[in-house]
Length: 109
Length: 118
Image 1 (cartoon, chains in turn cyan, brown):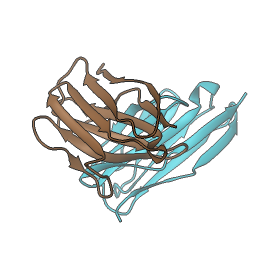
Image 2 (cartoon, helix red, strand yellow):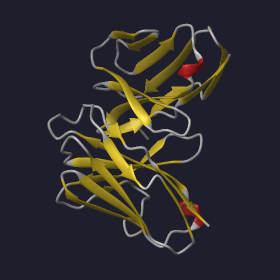
Image 3 (cartoon, chains in turn green, purple):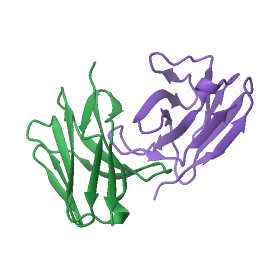
Image 4 (spheres, chains in turn purple, brown):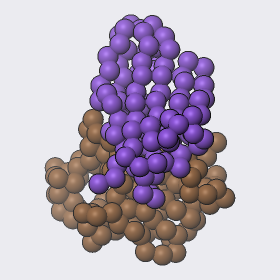
């Protein structure tokens, strides 16, 4: 069925290294949202991308929305231990909001 | 910012007990609230969409008689897990969307309820 795919499932990095998670949909998305869930916590909204090819930055986080509006990425530059958590993308391939499987980021100090 | 309060945060109870979870939007009105279930290391699975003043819309495979949803006001939705069994143990999270915004706006999540059935 229609779904939102996210890779990788896990990423372990050394503090200071970069990190990227990718999100793909089989159908065009009207927009894509990114959330962060800290261990034991609830998802917190980070950003929403709407336009084709859109790029938004939040400090060390860079979010991109593909030209075809079927894929998106989140890139973190120079990770810090505070970046630890699971990052979810979410989109509406068929109306309702579908979450990707999430990418769990662990950062070794 | 928008705040969603979910209560209780943790429940441990015996098999056969019914458990009620509350989800409140504290500083905004929500005509629509969502109930998710999350297993360890997994994504959020939408269980149902709660609509104020009308019946909830359940996702395929979710038993509506098992998971009773009531959305009696613009700030409160409740999920009751009836006759809970160990397989119902999970992390349940609600989210709400401000009625003043369209469906493409972000959802605000509660802190979640960790349910453990012995």
